[in-house]
Length: 186
Image 1: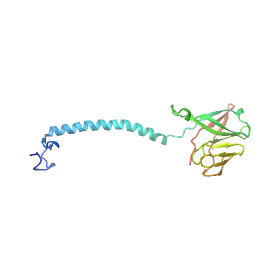
Image 2: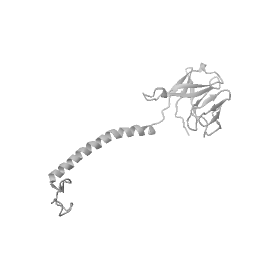
Image 3: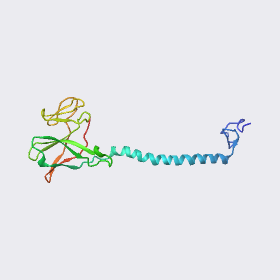
Image 4: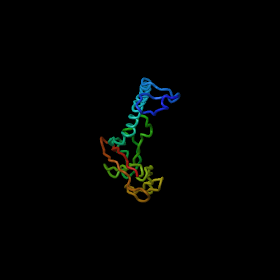
């Protein structure tokens, strides 16, 4: 006869039954089981927290990090001809160590005067595809969805919701510099 066949648990008799044999389990054995259960749960919770908190921080932290803007050199001012629009490449100043070539960013630079420059983002304001400068048409064209921009970066046709983004530029010690920024997409 099992220990609990004549009464139910929770009636204050102070013991439990083994699920396999139905034999009574002493209070000491019950405490040992609880202790062993805690012994396996607590380290598991600590290990989960030790792994989960840094991973969550890595995923969430960039959302709250302030935008980092830095001035990067695009080369000597003399290499840009007045009236020309050329594509330049610069290194992202805040890449991850393993970024490799993905740290390279592009921009279109137009020299409009002796000391006047405009720098456009290469990304279409629609979905971020790289636009091409078509000098013969004096237009920027997006090959992905047919977005067209005038030479001043304003929208001429297609789905782009706004003009090409512009970067701040300055001349410092005879070099043209561009201030990096995040380019809004969509």
